[in-house]
Image 1 (cartoon, rainbow, N blue to C red):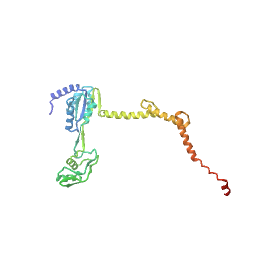
Image 2: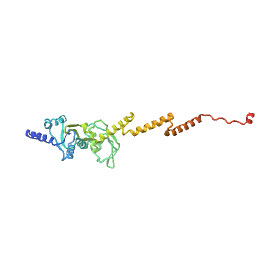
Image 3: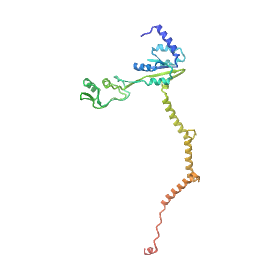
Image 4: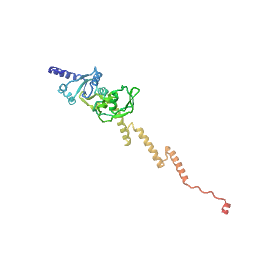
Length: 291
């Protein structure tokens, strides 16, 4: 429904007031998103948040006069909706990003992954369906009145385009290889603008990053001998082992080293004994004379 000039002025005036009543203003991408998925997000955010879907020109007029809201201008290209909410940007993005639906393959779409059909019975009735499935390159047969796929195969390789016969066959088999999701382009909380990349930094990401950085820092500090509360036990253990090794090497008679020196001496004595050729027993005088 087209707005009259007066209605547009009133719409912009009202929206300007509403934008000041919420902590976070987010831009939702709607161009390639199915309407039912956008509606699903909208329903999830009720009643605490407000959805605003309008022409770009009206959205621009609502934000262009405010120095802070002007940060959103570059995000208003194409088909978008504004989400007005008191949720923080990360929480909002988590709700939005969690909404996904499976979609049927359309002709000429590029497959993001291998699309397979598996061998086995189908619920398809015999008839024209058999011809359509064979046209898509699927091996089928009729067994006891049922259409059976006799051999599983990859119909569309990753990166290849879906043909019309394959699109039709996948729909018949109720295979939906594509996925649609909702995403935020950006979110403005107070004076801080969160980009799409920043919004993806959730609690799990932060925990993984901090854990990995801690491990690297721990290894580095230990390697260069920089003592911290976390590596002190390891460094003390390393110093103790090094001291014992040096004591054994230099033959230092300390209480904790003496036993190791004795053990070392025994091992060396055993090795030396193996190298000594045993002497032949001396023969009696009578045996020498006869010889």
